[in-house]
Length: 180
Image (cartoon, rainbow, N blue to C red; front, side, top):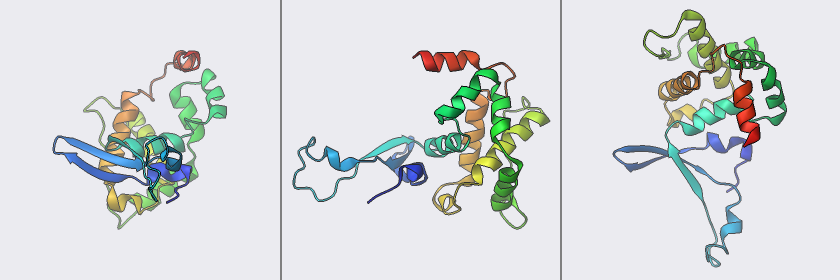
C-alpha cells in the first residue's frame, strides 16, 4: 500500500479501542524499513500506524491547508498577528468553494459552535471563514466516514483555544518555536 505523504491525514481509520476513548488511526510512511528492526524478515506486508484522539487528523490537515507548516510562510509570522496572517492566507475564492461544497442549498447545513457568549460576530465570521477555506480542499468522501459537524466543531474549538483571533502580536510564539 502506498499513500502519498500529502494525503496521509485524509486516510484516517476510526479505531474503537475502548468505550472511554475515541481514537482514529492513520498509516505511517516507510514501514518496510522496520521489517528487520522488528525481526519480521518473513513478513510480506508490514503496516505501521499512529493512534490519535478523534479529530486530530482533521485539525492538522486544516492547519496544513492554512499553510502553518510551511517554513517559508513562518518567516511572515514575525510581523503579524495570527488573525492578520490567517487573513492573508485565506482567499475569498476558497471560502466560497468550501461554502458551496458543504453548505449550499439542499446540502446538510451545520451550525458552527463557538464558546458560549464569548464570541462576537466579527470573531465568529473569522472562524467560519477559516472553516470554509479549509473544507474546500477536503474530498467529500472524507466525510462519509468522519462526521463533518464533529470535525468542524473540533477545529473551531482548537482555533479558539489557540486564540488565533487574538490581536496580540505573535512574535513571542515564533521566537519560542525557533529557539527550541
